[in-house]
Image (cartoon, rainbow, N blue to C red; front, side):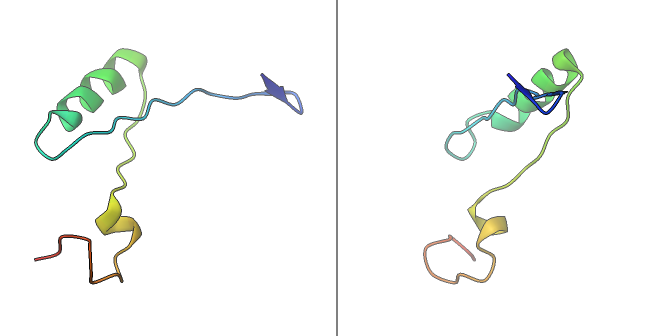
Length: 56
């Protein structure tokens, strides 16, 4: 798909529970596809929300 002459890049999203190997998989995929890792979880996105984010 093209948008105004630019090629749109595909992204890979890795989801899963804590301690399921997401980071290891992300590193392997980033190396394989010469990509980068962007980490975002609920604690980062909702840092001001004190309920329901599992803050300690």
